[in-house]
Image: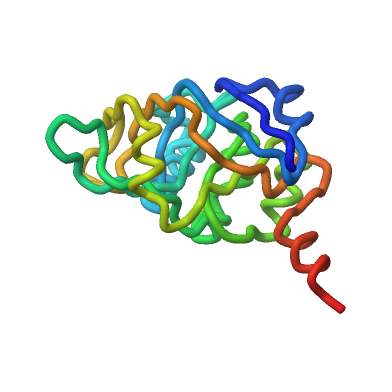
Amino acid sequence: MAETVRIQPPLSEDEARVLRAGTRVLISGTIYTARDAAHRRLTELIERGGDLPLELEGQIIYYVGPTPASPGKPTGSAGPTTSSRVDRYTPQLLARGVRAFIGKGDRSPEVAAALEENGAVYLAAVGGAGALLAGRVSSAEVIAWPELGPEAVHRFEVEDFPAIVVMDSHGGNLYESGRKSFRR
C-alpha cells in the first residue's frame, strides 16, 4: 500500500521535493482555487508587475469550479477539472513559488520540466467525486474576481483533503509509469 503523508501549506521547496509520485497526501489548511480565467488574470498581473490577490510562495492551487453551496454548507460540489487547460500558465506560476497544483489528467512536458526546476509537485484528486471532496472543505471564501463565478479565486480551508502525487520534482510521473506497467 502506498505511503500517506500529511501536508500543510504553505510548503517549502524542501517539503515538496521529498514528495514522490505515488505518495498519497492528506492536505489540511488553506488552499486556493483557480481555473482557466483566473490563471490568465494571474499571469497577466505578473507580466504587468501588478499586485496579486494572494501570495503564491508555497501555496497549493486547486483546479476546481465549485458549484453553489447548499444552505449550511461552505461549498457545493468541488471536483477537479482537467489540468492541461492551464498548462500554458503553469510554468510562470511555478516560477513565482507555487509548490503544488491539484487537478486531474496528464500535463505537458513543459509543466514536468517546470516542476523539476522549481521543486514542486502535481497532485491528482479523484474525478467524479466532487461531492465527497466538498465534504473536506470546512470554509470557502471568494478572494478575487467574483465576476468569474465558479472560476473566481476562492480560499478553501480543508481538513484531510485526499490527493495523490502524480508528478514530482524528480521526473516521476504516475501517468507514465502506470501505462508502462500495463504494456506487454
